Image (cartoon, rainbow, N blue to C red; front, side, top):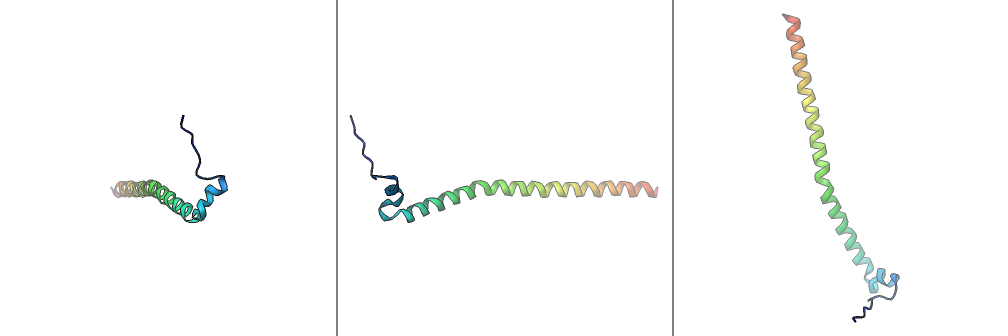
Length: 75
C-alpha cells in the first residue's frame, strides 16, 4: 500500500508556501480574474450589441410609421 504524506504540516503552512505564498496566491488570483473577464466580456458585448440593434430597429419602425401617417394626412 502506498502511504501519502502531505508537503505542508498545516493549512497556515500551505497558504504561506514557505514564504512564497504572497506571490503564488497573487498569481493564482490574477489568473482567475483574467479568465473571468475573458469569459464574461463577450457576453456583455453581445448584450450591448443586441440592445443597440433593438433601439435602431425601433427607431426605423417609428420613422416608417410617422412617414405613413404623414403620407395619409396629405392625401
